[in-house]
Image (tube, rainbow, N blue to C red; front, side, top):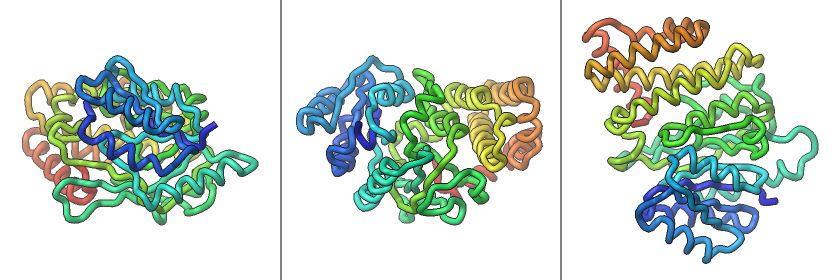
Length: 339
């Protein structure tokens, strides 16, 4: 069994996938790199096969018909033989100094007796094109450092301070046991990838290392605001699946329940502000339908979401109310550093 499986979902990634994989190779034979070609139409498939030939036993090329990011992640998970599992998108990369230290920690987990570590959390960097200051998402002061802990020892997460796909390395069997199943042909499923298994996590471990470089800046990137508005139905689908797949009232650990609620709140806020930014009549109608869906599907969650600060701001009436919501959103963009 390998120590770590890393899935690299690739779709038309010929221009940058080599760099991504090169940053993963220092893991050596303990790490398997699963390059998933998701029906690419450029040279991605050829490059994946070349990488496998150059690094036998380490790189594996997986080819499949196009199914979207979620399908590529699930293909990686299906083929993984590692004790732990991480996703690294093909335009991102791992830090050369932090990566060996993370592997050291995973070796310790593998050798330890008793309750296994379900989730390793590290920091990530918003590597935004043109930004002089690279925003680092870190969890110092919130999560105990350098030792296993449970959710009841976690502190208070600030608004905008979330554990995203870039932060996590899950125990592979946990992802399988929770029956993670990401939808096909849907963007933004990375939120489901983190959110759904989280309620199954008992033991966590935090390393205060800047491991993951999250590249932001391509015009066609899925987190580009204009792209997100065009794909708003996929964002809404993920938003609703988060509500459906995790019953927050059934989560017994109070700090985990609070964290999961806050995550749901920010995703719902993003959905709402994108629809407001869309500005067309159909966008505003979809926003109304989203909040009505939440009210019907989960009255408990609706009450907490609607009458929290974000819910109030997102639902201020009329054009003046929408202008206030957009202004608040722009401020948060600068503070948090996301697109």
